Amino acid sequence: MSASTSLSFFSSSLFLSSSHNKIPKLTSLSATKPQYPLKSLSISCQVATLPIFSFTGEKIGETYLDLKAAPSETARAVVHRGIITDLQNKRRGTASTLTRGEVRGGGRKPYPQKKTGRARRGSMRSPLRPGGGVIFGPKPRDWSIKINKKEKRLAMSTALSSAATESESVICVEEFGDKFEKPKTKEFIEAMKRWGLDPKEKVMFLMMDVSDNVGLSSRNIGTLRILTPRTLNLFDILNSDKLVLTPDTVDYLNGRYGVDFEGETDEDDDQDETEEKEGNENADAAD
Image (cartoon, rainbow, N blue to C red; front, side):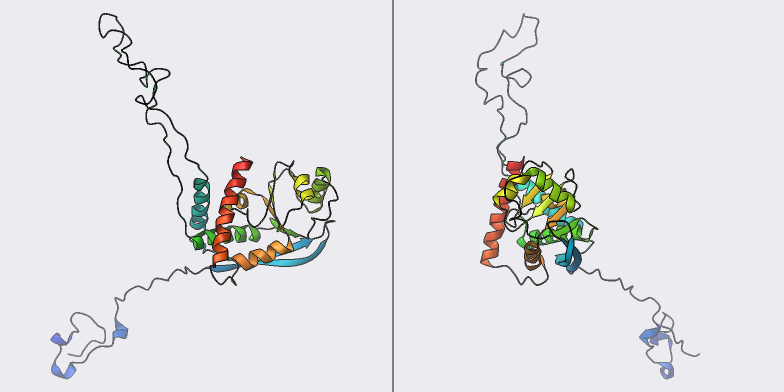
């Protein structure tokens, strides 16, 4: 009897003679553990090239956005958690109603229990009566939820990189704060058309500093939002159709949400808190 070269139950050393008592090679093992490919959970980098337009609408150069982005498997969940956190933290939670025990009046029985032909009633402040209490009505509560700072930063950078990778959804315009000598909405609309922007679409401008003339010229355009880095929020990024940046804001985004960002500092923590507060106040004022 010759020993089998494959590893099986009958080829074990118990069924072999001493002369053939050899350990078979494991390379012939037929039932091996399947090897599943490991999913990459590392943060990727999204590089997008943006055209730079002059105030007259001519293309004068190009720049790039080099931002961190969550993997495609978790990007939607990260951005969803970030937007839900922002919207829920804006709720004041001051809605309040009165129960039948808190409504004023209703202590006297409205009419006798019997001999009236009507349904028995013990109080005029029953939830079944007008002016009565509210069943299971809202009470003041805290709606705020917590999100990690790194997760919030990743949600913001993922949304920006997703918008930048779409064709013609993000452009860069040279600084135009000193181009408006006086507030004029008509001139601002003409400038938007030169940059290929439709005033009827939702457009968000991200600028490092907004001059008074630019702010006054654009405030009558209902579909336009002009934000600074301190008022930048996730909702306006997702809600806008076009995103307009300046060279300074491109450098700011690459430094704050790019791959070269080293880590959190005390100044960054204070800036995150200020951005969250001013972003909530800005959204409340817009509503």
